[in-house]
Image 1 (cartoon, rainbow, N blue to C red):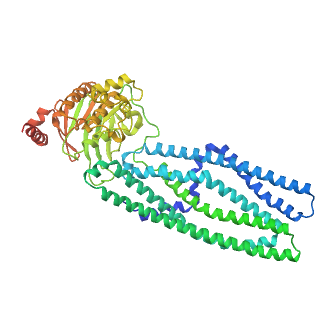
Image 2 (cartoon, helix red, strand yellow; image 1 turned 120 degrees about the vertical axis):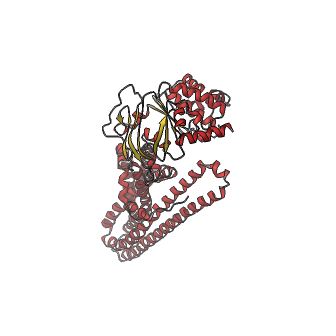
Image 3 (cartoon, rainbow, N blue to C red; image 1 turned 180 degrees about the horizontal axis):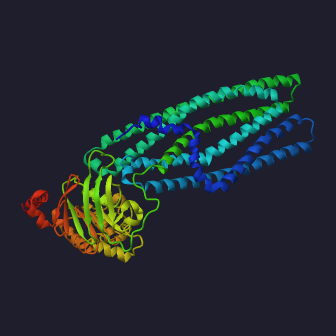
Length: 597
């Protein structure tokens, strides 16, 4: 299950994360909150300015401690108390504004990413695991939230303290400041060298976290199959392996960051000690007052602390740059199926005529295997057509092409004479109702699962659709009836009940095109009889395409299309196809003879 990030991707595509400029991708999400960001910057500037004023007050107190009157000393200390109050208010205000900004921006990012991926075609998910997408929406946005809501403001504050402190250091003592500056190149070099490694390790750690999430999601979504085949140990081993790789990458990142922090802090404070030693000699020689030395030391400590904090925050910014890059990749991911820039509009009312004009198609994951090979097919409005044939013949692919989940490599698929590629997907899909082979049940009530077919439907319409799908009786027998929760993926109900919920959903949609992909495969004989009667009634007024392996369910179809290896090999009514011999007659003989036996 585990798949290591490809080397080519790491070396080329991920090179962007080596540049902190990847954070520019957050620009469009910060822009709507410019005023909030400006106010936060003002609060941040206030706290930094107040902090830079404190050493001046300390110098005046120290230099005049024994000469000034008590009243003047009281004023100095009151002024210090005022500075502290301003610092407290400014810090609280900065935290409030910056944290709100982080929450708002991350909320918008999550919405934008989800809005993008929910509309991606199935081809996109052939190469990207759902768990990895979820990891990006959760883990990566959490990293960004931390940076915007904390790290960026701390970085800006320390940058102001560094620049302001450096200027005031020069003003206080040019000689000592120049000595301090000799240490700066010694600090910058390890930041640049180890910082580059930190960027790489941060991205690798995030990739393995996403891989771990995808691995767990895949196993948990198939937990019954995992347990049925006693595959728990292998699944645990696979998850443990990926999680340990993630841990190893995290440990390498932590060790590198710790080493960087140790080197930077040691070099900075070594420089401070040397400068303090030189300043003490100047005080003894009478070239500097004690207050000036104290002021300079405070500024140098502030500057050193700011540089140390910046070195730590730098790695956080690099992690955020990697996370931003990953999210931006999703936001701008290329899809093989897109709406046209100027979509055409279907004429109302939609008649439901379906046309395949010499359609050929290969799935992206299987480019050398033709799922459809030169298919020509026209389905008249209101006609019921059944697609039959062996597994892999292309029946379900026909259903997917009608909904434009994929685009054909050659030819066109049309609805009422209009190529689907010229229409907006959500516009023409609203005229279609689907009952998939594997019915999807959401973690919601039975009522809301059926209402998914038409959100504005009344309770009475929902119940009428359930009755038509032979689902009403079992729903009312549930503990809370239609308000009973069905659990994630419908774990609270049987396979046949799931299928009836899905059929009720399609009946409620009342669309001119009805797509049934093995819609009755999981039903017992009595339920199948009831549902089949409902489907027959429903199909009379709309175009219906039925995919079925059980030929008994399609004998009444207006036309049966026989498919093999992506091609149409025969078509006609049941009796005619049996009389012709060939593949359909063979399938009918096998099924009906076995059924009779």
